[in-house]
Length: 256
Picture 1 (tube, one colour):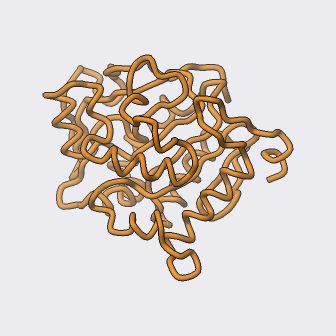
Picture 2: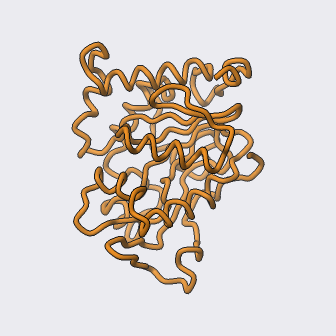
């Protein structure tokens, strides 16, 4: 479904999971901090989604300049991911894409608030959030609010994270919101309007990023997933620079 804009650039108030305006809510071992936000365009062509803000980004949200919060301390690596996919030119400054006057890029997270689990690392947390009911409610509520209706111009969503179980859970989540979604290849799914593609997370904790960026797909599984992502994007859209626009030939999309 399309027609609705995303929130405008800035901090986004929410009282769904925080009905009394609390700053923090806890459900078993899971804690959510009330700090949702959106960066860049409210009607973008491309949306980049992490899973949830990490501690660095959450602390930056509370104490720093808002424009610098999203993917703080990993934007150089995120730029390499986008450049590898042909979505960002080498001369373009990725920081400019996070500003309120940006037209084509947007950045956020699947769970807009900071969601953490006692005793979990960031990688394990993502999968466990789908498999433990105490966290799944946050995931479903947030995705329904922010992804249930999509902007008309949106054509591509990059999901940061290539863990197979995460891809499976995320695909089923998006399919529950948009029943026309079908699987394109092991890292991509979509419908006649929007393509969702899983790509490497730029976190410094991601030990597979180098292989994803430059490995031999014949020898490296992360590199193979990179090629699958590039294949999906190239078949679904004509990528030049998002400044010039991304077009999705209807035949390529609807033939999935």
